Image 1 (tube, rainbow, N blue to C red):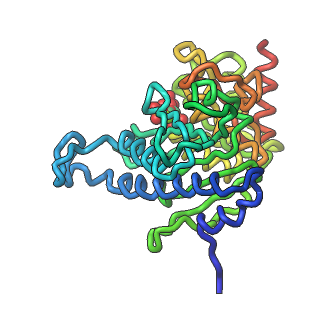
Image 2: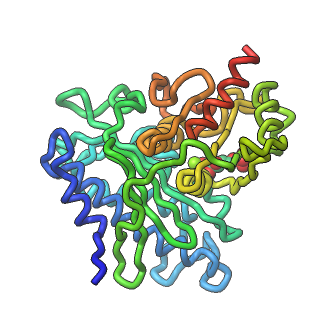
Length: 334
Ligand code: AHM
Ligand code: MG
Protein backbone atom coordinates (compact mmCIF):
# COMPACT_ATOMS: atom_id res chain seq x y z
CA UNK A 1 0.00 0.00 0.00
CA UNK A 2 1.36 3.44 -0.83
CA UNK A 3 1.55 5.78 2.12
CA UNK A 4 1.11 9.52 2.06
CA UNK A 5 2.06 12.33 4.35
CA UNK A 6 0.01 15.46 4.93
CA UNK A 7 1.50 18.91 5.41
CA UNK A 8 0.39 18.82 9.06
CA UNK A 9 2.15 15.50 9.69
CA UNK A 10 5.28 16.68 7.90
CA UNK A 11 5.46 19.94 9.85
CA UNK A 12 5.19 18.11 13.17
CA UNK A 13 7.85 15.58 12.11
CA UNK A 14 10.24 18.38 11.16
CA UNK A 15 9.60 20.45 14.27
CA UNK A 16 12.74 19.16 15.96
CA UNK A 17 14.80 20.75 13.16
CA UNK A 18 13.91 24.25 14.35
CA UNK A 19 16.36 25.91 16.70
CA UNK A 20 13.60 26.94 19.13
CA UNK A 21 11.34 23.88 18.69
CA UNK A 22 8.45 24.99 20.84
CA UNK A 23 5.92 24.33 18.11
CA UNK A 24 5.19 28.00 17.40
CA UNK A 25 6.64 28.07 13.91
CA UNK A 26 4.92 24.76 13.18
CA UNK A 27 1.60 26.26 14.18
CA UNK A 28 2.26 29.35 12.10
CA UNK A 29 2.96 27.24 9.02
CA UNK A 30 -0.13 25.17 9.70
CA UNK A 31 -2.24 28.36 9.91
CA UNK A 32 -0.88 29.55 6.56
CA UNK A 33 -1.76 26.15 5.07
CA UNK A 34 -5.34 26.44 6.36
CA UNK A 35 -5.81 29.97 4.94
CA UNK A 36 -4.37 28.74 1.62
CA UNK A 37 -7.16 26.16 1.37
CA UNK A 38 -9.81 28.83 1.93
CA UNK A 39 -8.24 31.11 -0.68
CA UNK A 40 -7.92 28.20 -3.09
CA UNK A 41 -11.66 27.54 -2.85
CA UNK A 42 -12.44 31.14 -3.86
CA UNK A 43 -9.78 31.30 -6.60
CA UNK A 44 -11.29 28.14 -8.12
CA UNK A 45 -14.67 29.84 -8.31
CA UNK A 46 -13.26 32.99 -9.96
CA UNK A 47 -14.44 32.02 -13.45
CA UNK A 48 -18.01 31.85 -12.19
CA UNK A 49 -18.25 35.51 -11.16
CA UNK A 50 -20.40 36.39 -14.17
CA UNK A 51 -22.84 33.68 -13.18
CA UNK A 52 -22.69 34.02 -9.43
CA UNK A 53 -22.31 37.80 -9.36
CA UNK A 54 -19.46 40.18 -10.12
CA UNK A 55 -17.20 41.88 -7.56
CA UNK A 56 -18.93 44.86 -6.04
CA UNK A 57 -22.36 43.22 -6.07
CA UNK A 58 -24.15 42.22 -2.92
CA UNK A 59 -23.99 38.52 -2.07
CA UNK A 60 -26.68 36.49 -0.35
CA UNK A 61 -25.44 37.34 3.12
CA UNK A 62 -25.91 40.99 2.25
CA UNK A 63 -22.14 41.61 2.18
CA UNK A 64 -20.48 43.28 -0.78
CA UNK A 65 -18.29 40.80 -2.72
CA UNK A 66 -14.61 41.54 -2.47
CA UNK A 67 -11.84 41.47 -5.02
CA UNK A 68 -9.91 38.25 -4.58
CA UNK A 69 -6.65 39.90 -3.56
CA UNK A 70 -8.45 41.76 -0.76
CA UNK A 71 -10.24 38.54 0.20
CA UNK A 72 -6.95 36.60 0.28
CA UNK A 73 -5.32 39.29 2.40
CA UNK A 74 -8.16 39.07 4.92
CA UNK A 75 -8.02 35.30 5.08
CA UNK A 76 -4.28 35.12 5.76
CA UNK A 77 -4.39 37.91 8.33
CA UNK A 78 -7.38 36.31 10.04
CA UNK A 79 -5.60 32.92 10.19
CA UNK A 80 -2.46 34.56 11.62
CA UNK A 81 -4.54 36.50 14.14
CA UNK A 82 -6.38 33.46 15.42
CA UNK A 83 -3.21 31.34 15.47
CA UNK A 84 -1.54 33.67 17.99
CA UNK A 85 2.08 33.08 16.87
CA UNK A 86 2.50 36.19 14.71
CA UNK A 87 2.90 39.72 16.12
CA UNK A 88 2.87 41.76 12.91
CA UNK A 89 2.13 41.26 9.22
CA UNK A 90 3.58 43.22 6.32
CA UNK A 91 1.31 42.72 3.33
CA UNK A 92 1.36 43.99 -0.23
CA UNK A 93 -2.23 45.05 0.40
CA UNK A 94 -1.36 47.45 3.25
CA UNK A 95 0.88 50.47 3.12
CA UNK A 96 1.71 50.11 6.82
CA UNK A 97 2.41 46.98 8.89
CA UNK A 98 -0.67 45.31 10.39
CA UNK A 99 -0.09 45.00 14.13
CA UNK A 100 -1.63 41.80 15.54
CA UNK A 101 -2.26 43.10 19.03
CA UNK A 102 -4.44 40.58 20.82
CA UNK A 103 -4.40 38.69 24.10
CA UNK A 104 -3.48 35.53 22.19
CA UNK A 105 -0.49 37.06 20.41
CA UNK A 106 0.87 39.02 23.37
CA UNK A 107 4.15 37.04 23.36
CA UNK A 108 4.17 36.19 19.68
CA UNK A 109 7.67 36.11 18.20
CA UNK A 110 7.08 35.81 14.50
CA UNK A 111 6.80 38.40 11.74
CA UNK A 112 5.13 37.52 8.45
CA UNK A 113 5.64 39.36 5.15
CA UNK A 114 3.11 38.30 2.54
CA UNK A 115 1.87 38.92 -0.96
CA UNK A 116 -1.58 37.36 -0.46
CA UNK A 117 -2.46 37.01 -4.15
CA UNK A 118 0.35 37.75 -6.53
CA UNK A 119 -0.42 38.10 -10.22
CA UNK A 120 -4.10 38.72 -9.45
CA UNK A 121 -4.59 40.50 -12.78
CA UNK A 122 -4.23 37.01 -14.32
CA UNK A 123 -7.33 35.63 -12.62
CA UNK A 124 -9.75 37.01 -15.18
CA UNK A 125 -8.11 34.88 -17.87
CA UNK A 126 -7.76 31.73 -15.77
CA UNK A 127 -3.98 31.87 -15.43
CA UNK A 128 -2.28 30.54 -12.28
CA UNK A 129 -1.80 32.96 -9.41
CA UNK A 130 0.01 32.56 -6.11
CA UNK A 131 0.61 33.53 -2.51
CA UNK A 132 4.16 34.28 -1.34
CA UNK A 133 5.18 34.43 2.32
CA UNK A 134 8.25 35.07 4.38
CA UNK A 135 8.70 34.51 8.13
CA UNK A 136 11.16 36.21 10.49
CA UNK A 137 11.73 36.04 14.22
CA UNK A 138 11.44 39.25 16.13
CA UNK A 139 14.81 40.42 17.54
CA UNK A 140 13.59 42.98 20.07
CA UNK A 141 11.87 42.25 23.36
CA UNK A 142 8.83 43.95 24.90
CA UNK A 143 6.43 46.53 23.50
CA UNK A 144 4.81 46.38 20.10
CA UNK A 145 6.99 45.41 17.12
CA UNK A 146 8.34 48.30 15.09
CA UNK A 147 9.17 48.73 11.42
CA UNK A 148 12.80 48.03 12.32
CA UNK A 149 11.77 44.58 13.55
CA UNK A 150 10.29 43.82 10.14
CA UNK A 151 13.07 45.25 7.99
CA UNK A 152 15.49 42.36 8.33
CA UNK A 153 17.75 41.00 5.60
CA UNK A 154 16.34 38.05 3.67
CA UNK A 155 19.18 35.98 5.10
CA UNK A 156 17.43 36.12 8.48
CA UNK A 157 14.25 34.44 7.25
CA UNK A 158 13.36 31.39 9.33
CA UNK A 159 10.89 30.11 6.75
CA UNK A 160 9.45 31.07 3.38
CA UNK A 161 7.08 29.57 0.90
CA UNK A 162 4.56 30.00 -1.85
CA UNK A 163 1.25 28.55 -2.87
CA UNK A 164 0.53 28.18 -6.57
CA UNK A 165 -3.16 28.03 -7.44
CA UNK A 166 -2.75 26.22 -10.73
CA UNK A 167 -3.93 23.09 -12.53
CA UNK A 168 -3.22 21.62 -9.10
CA UNK A 169 -2.78 23.74 -6.01
CA UNK A 170 0.62 23.33 -4.41
CA UNK A 171 2.32 24.66 -1.31
CA UNK A 172 6.12 24.77 -1.43
CA UNK A 173 8.13 25.87 1.59
CA UNK A 174 11.49 25.87 3.30
CA UNK A 175 12.63 26.34 6.87
CA UNK A 176 16.26 26.48 5.78
CA UNK A 177 16.66 22.72 5.51
CA UNK A 178 15.78 22.10 1.89
CA UNK A 179 12.56 22.63 0.02
CA UNK A 180 9.46 20.44 0.01
CA UNK A 181 6.31 20.63 -2.08
CA UNK A 182 2.78 19.54 -1.18
CA UNK A 183 -0.14 19.11 -3.56
CA UNK A 184 -3.67 19.76 -2.39
CA UNK A 185 -5.82 16.65 -2.71
CA UNK A 186 -9.30 18.18 -3.04
CA UNK A 187 -10.99 14.87 -2.22
CA UNK A 188 -9.62 14.91 1.34
CA UNK A 189 -8.90 18.65 1.63
CA UNK A 190 -5.25 18.10 2.60
CA UNK A 191 -1.90 19.19 1.20
CA UNK A 192 0.04 15.94 0.68
CA UNK A 193 3.80 15.63 0.26
CA UNK A 194 4.28 15.18 -3.49
CA UNK A 195 7.66 16.82 -4.20
CA UNK A 196 10.11 15.96 -1.40
CA UNK A 197 13.52 17.65 -1.35
CA UNK A 198 13.18 19.75 -4.47
CA UNK A 199 16.49 20.56 -6.19
CA UNK A 200 16.76 23.01 -9.05
CA UNK A 201 18.98 21.59 -11.82
CA UNK A 202 22.34 23.39 -12.04
CA UNK A 203 21.62 24.18 -15.70
CA UNK A 204 18.32 24.53 -17.48
CA UNK A 205 16.99 25.42 -20.93
CA UNK A 206 14.31 27.94 -19.96
CA UNK A 207 14.66 31.70 -19.68
CA UNK A 208 11.77 33.76 -18.33
CA UNK A 209 11.62 37.50 -18.88
CA UNK A 210 9.09 40.05 -20.11
CA UNK A 211 10.73 40.61 -23.50
CA UNK A 212 8.29 43.42 -24.25
CA UNK A 213 10.61 45.51 -22.08
CA UNK A 214 13.66 44.60 -24.21
CA UNK A 215 14.37 48.14 -25.47
CA UNK A 216 14.47 49.37 -21.84
CA UNK A 217 17.02 46.77 -20.66
CA UNK A 218 20.71 47.47 -20.11
CA UNK A 219 23.21 46.25 -22.72
CA UNK A 220 24.30 43.37 -20.49
CA UNK A 221 20.74 42.03 -20.15
CA UNK A 222 20.11 42.51 -23.89
CA UNK A 223 23.30 40.58 -24.73
CA UNK A 224 22.32 37.76 -22.36
CA UNK A 225 18.90 37.46 -24.01
CA UNK A 226 20.58 37.27 -27.44
CA UNK A 227 22.94 34.63 -26.01
CA UNK A 228 19.89 32.59 -24.89
CA UNK A 229 18.54 32.75 -28.45
CA UNK A 230 21.77 31.78 -30.26
CA UNK A 231 22.33 28.37 -31.80
CA UNK A 232 24.96 26.39 -29.91
CA UNK A 233 24.43 22.64 -29.76
CA UNK A 234 26.96 21.84 -26.97
CA UNK A 235 25.21 24.20 -24.55
CA UNK A 236 21.77 23.20 -25.87
CA UNK A 237 20.97 26.71 -27.06
CA UNK A 238 18.73 28.28 -28.16
CA UNK A 239 16.94 28.06 -24.85
CA UNK A 240 13.17 28.04 -24.60
CA UNK A 241 11.41 31.27 -23.64
CA UNK A 242 8.59 30.79 -21.11
CA UNK A 243 6.93 33.72 -19.36
CA UNK A 244 3.54 33.54 -17.72
CA UNK A 245 3.70 36.91 -15.97
CA UNK A 246 2.71 35.32 -12.69
CA UNK A 247 5.80 35.13 -10.50
CA UNK A 248 4.93 32.01 -8.52
CA UNK A 249 3.97 30.05 -11.63
CA UNK A 250 7.12 31.13 -13.51
CA UNK A 251 9.35 30.32 -10.53
CA UNK A 252 7.65 27.00 -9.80
CA UNK A 253 8.18 25.74 -13.35
CA UNK A 254 11.83 26.84 -13.42
CA UNK A 255 12.46 25.35 -9.98
CA UNK A 256 11.29 21.94 -11.16
CA UNK A 257 12.72 21.99 -14.69
CA UNK A 258 15.74 24.29 -14.37
CA UNK A 259 15.83 27.78 -15.79
CA UNK A 260 16.37 31.45 -15.04
CA UNK A 261 13.80 34.09 -14.10
CA UNK A 262 14.79 37.69 -14.80
CA UNK A 263 13.10 40.95 -13.79
CA UNK A 264 15.82 43.53 -14.34
CA UNK A 265 15.81 47.25 -13.73
CA UNK A 266 14.42 49.22 -16.66
CA UNK A 267 14.23 52.92 -17.38
CA UNK A 268 10.62 52.96 -16.12
CA UNK A 269 11.42 50.69 -13.14
CA UNK A 270 14.97 51.70 -12.12
CA UNK A 271 14.87 49.27 -9.17
CA UNK A 272 13.04 46.53 -11.02
CA UNK A 273 9.37 45.81 -10.38
CA UNK A 274 9.22 43.06 -7.81
CA UNK A 275 9.07 43.81 -4.10
CA UNK A 276 11.99 42.78 -1.92
CA UNK A 277 10.22 41.86 1.32
CA UNK A 278 7.41 39.63 0.07
CA UNK A 279 8.38 38.65 -3.47
CA UNK A 280 12.17 38.57 -4.01
CA UNK A 281 13.34 37.49 -0.53
CA UNK A 282 11.06 34.49 0.00
CA UNK A 283 11.60 33.25 -3.55
CA UNK A 284 15.38 33.78 -3.23
CA UNK A 285 15.42 31.77 0.03
CA UNK A 286 13.55 28.89 -1.62
CA UNK A 287 15.77 28.94 -4.70
CA UNK A 288 18.96 28.92 -2.65
CA UNK A 289 17.63 26.14 -0.45
CA UNK A 290 16.92 24.15 -3.62
CA UNK A 291 20.54 24.64 -4.70
CA UNK A 292 20.06 27.61 -7.03
CA UNK A 293 21.11 31.27 -6.87
CA UNK A 294 19.37 34.63 -6.63
CA UNK A 295 21.02 38.01 -7.22
CA UNK A 296 19.91 41.57 -7.97
CA UNK A 297 22.74 41.80 -10.52
CA UNK A 298 25.26 43.20 -8.02
CA UNK A 299 24.73 41.20 -4.85
CA UNK A 300 22.95 38.23 -3.33
CA UNK A 301 19.30 39.17 -2.81
CA UNK A 302 19.32 37.71 0.72
CA UNK A 303 22.14 40.13 1.70
CA UNK A 304 20.24 43.30 0.72
CA UNK A 305 19.64 45.54 3.73
CA UNK A 306 16.01 46.66 3.37
CA UNK A 307 15.18 50.33 3.79
CA UNK A 308 11.40 50.26 3.42
CA UNK A 309 8.50 47.83 3.46
CA UNK A 310 7.52 48.00 -0.20
CA UNK A 311 10.93 48.57 -1.78
CA UNK A 312 11.65 46.96 -5.12
CA UNK A 313 14.61 44.97 -6.33
CA UNK A 314 15.87 43.74 -9.66
CA UNK A 315 16.22 39.96 -9.70
CA UNK A 316 17.97 37.20 -11.58
CA UNK A 317 17.20 33.83 -10.04
CA UNK A 318 17.30 30.13 -10.83
CA UNK A 319 19.79 27.50 -11.94
CA UNK A 320 23.30 28.34 -10.74
CA UNK A 321 24.92 27.94 -14.16
CA UNK A 322 22.42 30.27 -15.82
CA UNK A 323 22.70 32.95 -13.12
CA UNK A 324 26.50 32.76 -13.44
CA UNK A 325 26.19 33.29 -17.20
CA UNK A 326 24.08 36.44 -16.89
CA UNK A 327 26.45 37.77 -14.21
CA UNK A 328 29.23 37.45 -16.76
CA UNK A 329 27.30 39.73 -19.15
CA UNK A 330 26.38 42.17 -16.37
CA UNK A 331 30.01 42.35 -15.16
CA UNK A 332 31.21 43.03 -18.70
CA UNK A 333 29.01 46.15 -19.00
CA UNK A 334 30.31 47.72 -15.76
P1 AHM B 1 1.50 42.20 -8.73
O1 AHM B 1 2.11 42.06 -7.36
O2 AHM B 1 0.92 43.57 -8.96
O3 AHM B 1 0.56 41.08 -9.06
O4 AHM B 1 2.72 42.17 -9.77
C1 AHM B 1 3.67 41.16 -9.67
C2 AHM B 1 3.65 40.35 -10.93
C3 AHM B 1 4.45 39.09 -10.82
O5 AHM B 1 3.62 38.00 -10.50
C4 AHM B 1 5.03 38.92 -12.18
O6 AHM B 1 6.25 38.23 -12.14
C5 AHM B 1 5.23 40.33 -12.64
O7 AHM B 1 4.29 41.12 -11.93
C6 AHM B 1 4.94 40.49 -14.09
O8 AHM B 1 5.19 41.82 -14.45
P2 AHM B 1 5.12 42.28 -15.97
O9 AHM B 1 3.67 42.23 -16.35
O10 AHM B 1 5.68 43.67 -15.95
O11 AHM B 1 5.95 41.33 -16.78
MG1 MG C 1 2.81 40.88 -6.09
